[in-house]
Image (cartoon, rainbow, N blue to C red; front, top):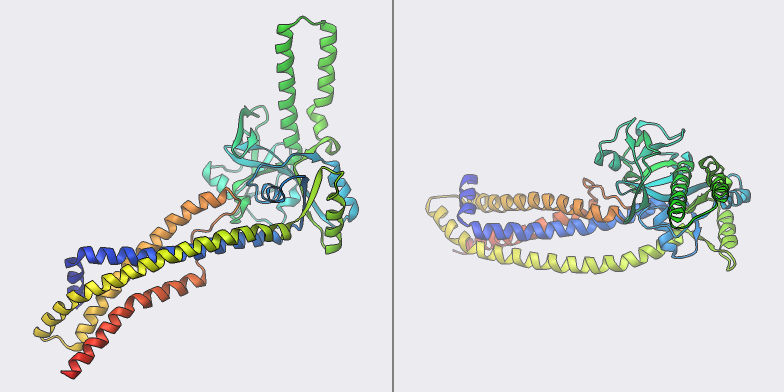
Length: 423
């Protein structure tokens, strides 16, 4: 009966192909809508557990959160490192981590920070940075550029979509650690000591000053003694060695794990005043606001997905009805050949099972392709999607679709049985 069922499917190629396509579309869209929305939500919740306050320049609270925690937006500006010391004075038990952005490696952001940011993260190779111009790279960065321990990388000025042509080839970084996959924004960035960012930018600024002076000297005549005096003054101010002094450095954001609600409220109250160009945001509240906006988009996407699934299921029902017309002819032939009721039921069951398996395999392939494409988009937002992650709800929806698609066949068999018994 199984071979006969396969021959029957081949003889009805167009109907069978349309049936598989419609069924696989309903399966794929259902799984994708559940998987992507759930993973994005999980990604936000993971962040919420690490830091409860972020300090940065005044501006969009969402941009501050996305730039400093998810590393997906441009920073709002810089603030003096002395703010870090001010926060630590509130309670020395708090975890206070500075963040400095501004450079990239082939488009992947380089995050200047302190080793404490990577506490709790496991390394697949190497260790955390400790010496000058050492870096730890995320797993995706290491895979994308075949980086190993000891590899040298050259950073460029700028971050994200705003990347200048100036590279810091005079200060190459050495890879000393590769993080295990975290399925977070950490997989897509490079980490180094914040002093290295200051040193690289100090050298860059000094070069720009010298270039401007040389251009100016070609246009006008200056007193050599005055020019030499001015040049010495610039070197004294922008000497890279001075950038290692934290008091002279700048950061783009400060992450705080306050330890208790009282500390968090104190920080937010002290920094959110009109006469300061700074702001302190509550991570949980900002995430909830962001999730509220995402939920609206999610509901619209789910509504559109549901409409597509309903249309696909309608097509499945129509295809099933058309196939039943052929079933009548096939079953009459089987009865003439002396096939029993059990064999005719197996014949119908085999056809449906084969078509459902083909649709399921097609939907799984389509799901993985779509998740890979979605991951490229979500990674730019700092959310990394796990391609092989499947939620229980996906299994439930798949089972429901399979049962629904088999229902017409089951009803048809019962109807045929009733007609035969009446005869």
